[in-house]
Amino acid sequence: MAEYGQPTREETKWAKSALERIVPLDEELSRACGELCGQRKTADVIDACVVIVAREHQDAIVTGDAADLRRLDPRCALIEV
Image (cartoon, rainbow, N blue to C red; front, side, top):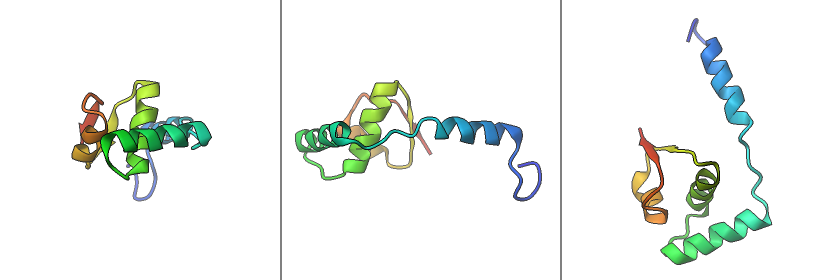
């Protein structure tokens, strides 16, 4: 950060690009999340949603919860923090 509480231009650019990636949790995605949870024997629909959207966009997932995400998709690209 340039000054206390003031984001740099790079941080602002990153935040704006992240907002462009908001994906609605519609009926189709909700069903896909439920199916993935059923296949992998887990109830974490939010993690399932993150995995499915990352697959569709061919994105890596930044996470501190790699084990749960790998359980849903052992091949998903993760950046562990």
